[in-house]
Length: 162
Image 1 (cartoon, rainbow, N blue to C red):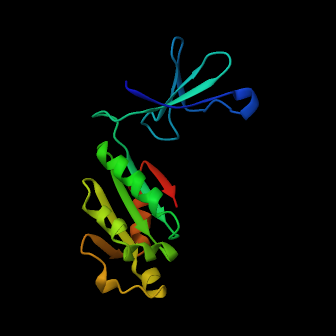
Image 2: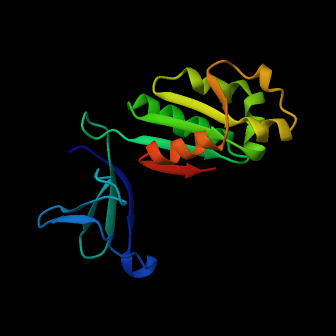
């Protein structure tokens, strides 16, 4: 397995509890997941610090990430997360609704639909309610409904709400 350091935490001062879905290994700590079948991070405890390391991509360890965008305030985070995930070979599903539909007016956001492994859709009703001209939305972005949100929730291994 390949690891990427994330952070070291003192479980005593931070109130960190060990995750429940872990497989323990005496020499290295535990491999843990967050409710799915795929391991997500490695946990090691050296007596003073709890160290978390995200598992990096391998052929058998890709993730389908959902990003629910319901505000227009986090463009930099959406772009950064999506580009990083795409570069590592992960799939990204982006669904925009409510004020998040305003981001389709920004080319940096709409250009994400052209990245490998990225699919984008938005709630047409929300866009129309926020006076977005849905006919001007690039072809790579599906003008859909909350059904697209439900599909993302079903298909994604993890979902981030921004």
